[in-house]
Length: 179
Image (cartoon, rainbow, N blue to C red; front, side):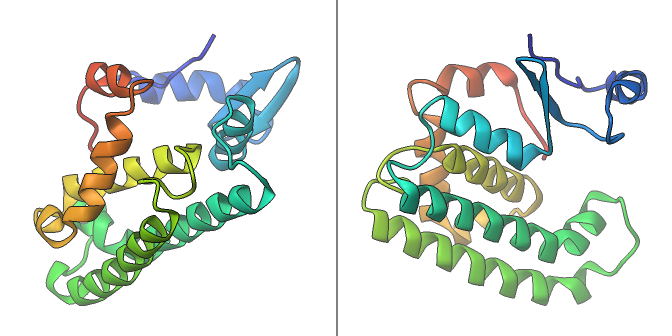
């Protein structure tokens, strides 16, 4: 049975559950008396288990590559987003040019990958990587009021992922997420 750290309850829930974590961190997934730590590792595992990985080793490697590149992107824009969220001190005007440059580079690359795949997804079919990227795009829309206007094709991609019949209901029921 999945356990989620819910809003408003997350601090006491995490504090109580960290004693169950050998690494002292979340998330983890327990499967058949084995524990998988780290979000990308467990996401890759679930992608393979539920046929949401690539159709072959090359597509799976492409998904891994794009997701790892996305992680690098978020590492690069973290300082801007952290100030924007009010979690760090800093000058948004000074941080904005690097943020804009990094976004342009990443979303141009992502769009080229989508164009190359010709399926509307990052490979020949919807994958766990598409889910992760769509969530990242939603985060960017929530923190950058100019995002939708700058990257309309990227937003269309996110909407296409979120409208997939097997996840549409979940996305609608879960409510708004800030990040």
